[in-house]
Amino acid sequence: MLNFFSKYKFIFYLSNFFLIILYLFPGSILGCFLYDDCSLQPQITTYYIVSTNHLYAFLLLSIIGFFTFKKWNQFFPLSIYLILLSILLELAHFIIPIRSFEFSDLFGNLIGVIIVVIISYFLNKT
Image (cartoon, rainbow, N blue to C red; front, side):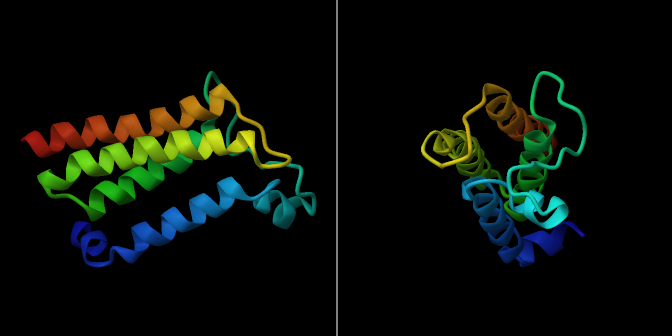
């Protein structure tokens, strides 16, 4: 199972592509399909301090990324990439119509990445 992701890097690149499309679409693509209303955002679980949708999205992307690039020399560049992607995509909401920048979304993005970075760091050290 673990070699599956490293053999098929396109899964990581494809998940990046879909995440970027979901983030940069003015409105909600998922809301358009599920509710026939592009202004409604589906909510997986309730918000706490952070946006759980964003936490789950970046948690999943980070897990796929660290299974795909599991060599130790790829750890730091992948970590930086995921952190910068989470920040830049949320900052892009300043200029995208119908979308808005929210700190809870940004914290959800960052926490999703940081959880996987910490776990991967300790798993790679052993």
